[in-house]
Amino acid sequence: MYKTMNTMLLAFLLLFALISQQPLLGAAEASPEQVVDITGKKLIAGAYYNVLLTMPYTNSKSPEGLALSSIGEKCPLDVVVVNRYHSSPLRFTPLNTKKGVVRVSTDLNVMFAPNATCPYHSPVWKLDYYSVEGESVVTTDGFVGKPGAESLDNWFKIEKYAAAYKLVYCPRVCISCKHQCKDLGMAVDKNGNRRLALSYVPFQVKFVKA
View 1: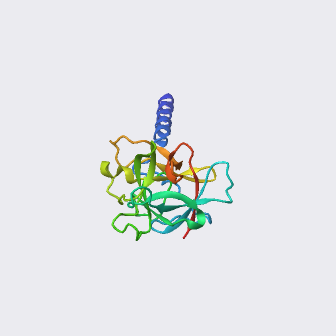
View 2 (view 1 turned 180 degrees about the horizontal axis):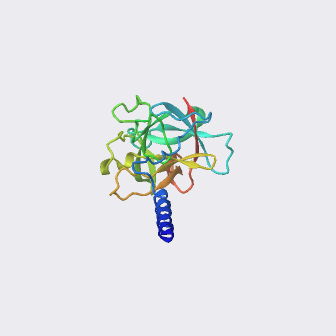
View 3 (view 1 turned 90 degrees about the horizontal axis):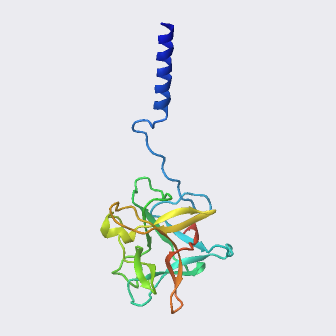
């Protein structure tokens, strides 16, 4: 009987160890980390922020910014790299807006404020494939939400990068769609326009409440 009790106890301990290694039924996965601005405050979905850009190994005390410019056709406007004092604020709308905050590694739409120059084109970012000497650049006239194949060009992410963040094009809103994941950096076209584009050298990004 003593031997039987030991066998039952051993079996119970093994079963307990196995169960303890499994996630609890219905346990929620941890949410991704919240994005914060340069003061440490969390980014609020729908609020406007100026974006500070620095390239690797450059002087982070002299960051640049982002704005809209008419390149080629008058409309829609394209996203360009400018002096930070000429930058325009942006806002971020996550795929899941219930929490009201912006988190890393989550799909989101990025947009400027409405622009009077192109009132019939939206200021929402979208990717324009191979439009500048083989480079894929960021332009506007995208739309918010509607996850799926038709909106694949409109989704971006914020990822941790060094002591700050980086912007990434890597949509997950369409599981069955083929897509590339790549950082956003700068491409200079033949006319000298500094375009926000897919790049192997990403900008380091920080956010300032507008």
